[in-house]
Length: 299
Image 1 (cartoon, rainbow, N blue to C red):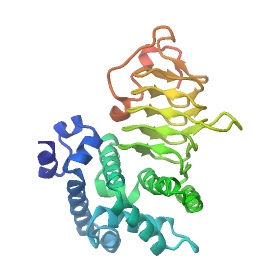
Image 2: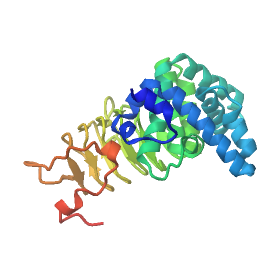
Image 3: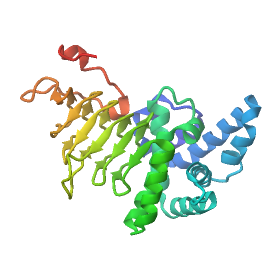
Image 4: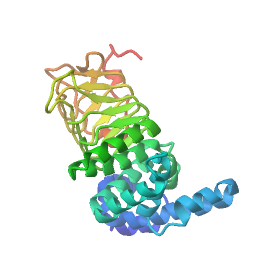
């Protein structure tokens, strides 16, 4: 069973990588990931004594992933008026009561570990990946928003933006298995929806087209890859498994399993017969497979 394979090793196997982060998170992944994180922290504390105290206080002294993450986020996001103890209690209460939040956290950790070759360990992601941390803090802000605790949700959004340079409105809906790679400058508007297993690079905007009210932000399907600096504006739909090239400006719907590039964005292969791919780009992270097929593309 996949869960047995997960518990047997410290690095992702080929079989594991064939499963989605969500499947892995739901199949014994939470306990396994926490075991890996603690083992990695012990190893790093032994090899780098300067980090031993930090690793003990953030990871090794805690009995669970939700307590470690709550402590770490509380310290990252605290201010002179939002105390770390208040934030710790807020985060821990939310994670402890909601298994969906915990499974989303695990799926996001697995997504970063599998998709990003720069991610050397789960503990590295937990401690140092601001895209991961911003996403987990947003999940709490979104929960507060849905519970009509909107002033606190907006205050948390502001701190997330200040600390991580990631600005996600607390009303925005985000799925599981999300990778915000680098994450600096990511902006996500109020009525945006992001599906599962989506990968988004730095300086991506999911915004509106102006002062229009109501449902005015993009809807991103499962398995989508959005390249660095891309801008998607308005209540447009990005189909499941689509790929948005770096720097593109998208103002129209994008069909599933197609690629758009340019400003304004155009379908690779043309709108009448767009080229389709079988991969899930949000998981494969393949940014360049279309270049040889579209001679007008310029880096």
